[in-house]
Length: 589
Image (tube, rainbow, N blue to C red; front, side, top):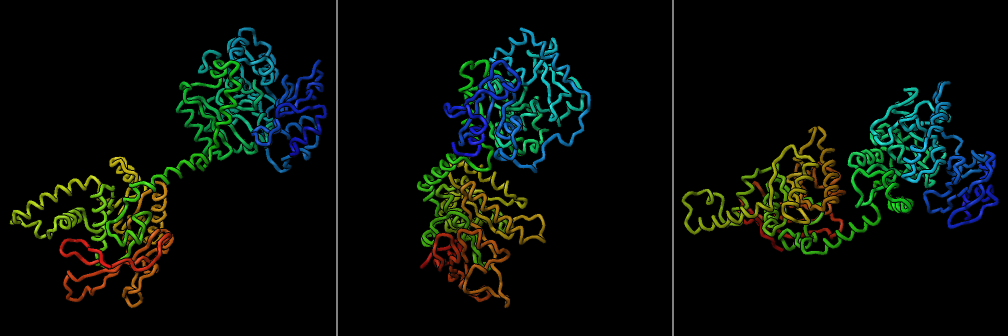
C-alpha cells in the first residue's frame, strides 16, 4: 500500500502486519488506558473501499474512526493526517452548554444493565463492550440511550421500553431533546471525517452494526430525518442510509437523500424481506450470517445520484436501439415518398413554416390521418380549425367527396354508400387519432396525453402534431418570444424522455417590404431564434401561386424545402399539388 493513508498507519503502528486487506496491531490505546492486555487494532486498507483507513479496537477501548480521528486520539500532528483542513467548522462549537449534565446518572444506568436486560441484547449478539462504548444503560424498566453532545457530555437521554419501542420518554434537559439534537452517537460524525458512516433509524438498529465494527449514528425514528440538517454531515464522504422496510420510512429516506445529495447511498432491502423488517430483526434472525448479509447489502447500495446506473443506462440504450431497428420505428412515415426519403421518416422534432393559406394544416391533417389509418397513434393539438373542420376534411379526402356534397341531403345513392363506408373508416381511425383543442395545454398535460394514448393503443411511439407553434398557450402574451422558446425546450425533453415525434406548424417572417422570401432559409421562421437549435428538421412550405390572382384551385402548387437538418441534406424536397376540392395534396417531382 503506497497511498498516504496506508503510509500514516504503517508509520505509527510499527508492529502491524498485513492480514487479508487490513493491518492488525496490538492496540496502543488499550495500553495507554492500562488494560491488562491490549486488544487487536484493525485498520481496513483498501483504496477501492468506502472504509479505507477505518480503524477500530476489538475491545472497544476507544471509538473507531478514520485517519483524522486516529491522529487526534494518538496525539500526533493533524497536518500529518491525509485530508486535514484547518479551516473547517464543526457542529457544536458555537453552542453554550449548561454546567449540569447527566454524566453521573449515566454511570448508574450502565451499572443497572441486569442479566435480563443483557439477555435482550444477546438476541442480536450484542456484546457488553459495545453497550459500554455507547454508554447504553437501564433504569429498571426502560433502556436508556444517552444522546452525547459534541463536547462529550450528555444532557438528555431517550428511555425506551425494550419490548414496546413505541413506549418511550425523554429524560434530562428538554432543550437537548429537541429536533436539532436528536442524533444518537453524534460524536461519531467527527470520528468519521472524510470517511463513511451509517445513518439508521432507531438506536437499537445501530447496535448490530457497531457490533460488526462499523461506524454509525441513529435518529430515533424515520420522521426525524426531516429535521436532520445535511450540513451537520458536511465532512462525511459517504453516508449509508438504512431505514426500516416500510413505505413511509423509505419515502422519508429518499427525501433526505434528495436534500443531501450524491454522498448518500441508500441500503435497499432484499426483495424477499418482509415489510417492516429492521436491522435488529435481521441480526436476530441472521445469527452468524448477519455479517455476510450486511456486507452484501453494502456492495449493492447505490448512490442517490441524478444519473442512471451505468448498467441501467446501457440497458436503456440497447432497448431503444432494438426499438429503432424494429418495424414500428420503420413504419413512422408520413405517406409522401419524397418527403419520407428526405427526412428519413417522421422522427424527432419537425417544424414546417409556410405562407398564409398555403395549406399547412391540410398538409399535416393528411399526414396525421394517413398515419392513424396505419395504426400509428397521433395527437393533433389544434388551435386553428376546430375538431369539426378537421374531421370533415379527413372525411372529404378519404371519400373523394367535396364537403358540400357530404352535407347535401340529396346525395346520390352510390355516393351515399361510399360516404357511409368512409364514415366507418373515420370512426375506426379515431381510435388512433385524438384531436385536442385545450387552450390551457401545459407540457405536463401533453406528457399525460402521450402516456395515455401509448397505453391505450399498446404502441411504442406517438406522433404529436401542433397547429400551430405560435398559438400554444403562454402565461403572458407580452412574453410570447420566450414562451415559444420555453415550449421548444419542453418538446425536446418530451422527445428524449418519451420517444415522441413532432410535426409542428410555424409562421414565417415577412421581409421589410412586407413580402415573404422566395428563397427559403432558416431565418424565415417567425418569432423564435431557437427553432434552428431545437428542430431536427426545419422545413418551409412555399406557395407557387398568387393568392390574389384568379387561379383555379386545381393549379395551385406548393414547394417543400428542407432548410436545416441534424442528419439529412438540406434542399428542395418536392412539389405538392392541391387535390381540390378534397382537402389534400399529391406529391410531384
